[in-house]
Image (tube, rainbow, N blue to C red):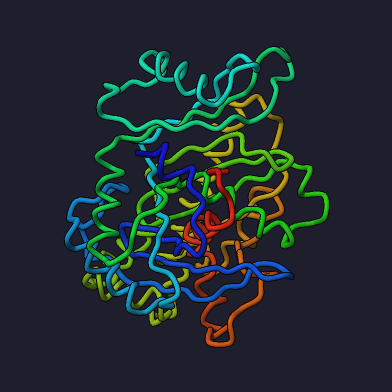
Length: 359
């Protein structure tokens, strides 16, 4: 299925990020002078409908996506979504440079049994030829992607229930990497040649990925997210979870919340990101991270940018993929600025309208 979905170029797809806390959607067009944000929408997700990036209730998720369908521009009915987490495997493998795409597909299918730790009848495979291997010019670097078919089918079914047609099921880390290019102007000019880490902090899962001189080289999920901050508000101020979420978003918390819940969460957040960076450096053999881009709902939390810059000693910015983009007149730019960090994955998915491959 992935082979068919990922390779077909479809214009004007809505990028739909299905998260455990909300569904985010972005619609882009492309003009002579660059991308245009035509529309976006965010709808809350019922608790328990998505757990750890896996859809538990297709009907409930479909109902939320249907709300997105009613709120987003009617220009597009096709959609791109993404899989992530433990059910997704990506590997760079080395194949003979002389093989055609058809020969590569046949060879990868033969060798997949030893490369993928799941029964092959339970997974969907796709691949992309990258470049010639520097160490051995007779070999080509090939990116192999595999995902559990049931995860893909659940997203396709949810999009269908929401009156969208699924045209692309991507990998979340690829979507973040694609949106990274839009955030580059927020960093110093030399960032395009440096090691840049992107930390997308969701409600329950954080995706850490790294790009070196424009090449995506690493990604890893960790179980941590903004819901931990919400739970602190619940326990400290005896609120319901929904009331705590509302208070967090509206900043309607007692004056001393800074010391009681925000500062402790800042400490945990910093520890999680420091640990993720250290794991990346140890695993990859790289020396350092030069720049840090923070996205996701938690990126908008008070003081995150300065905290990480000062404590980690790494130049940090809050992601805004629309920073240098044309914005449709119908969009409230102030409201957009408040939610832009949450739309990183959805934006990367929307960019699939203009790229035939998944990176």
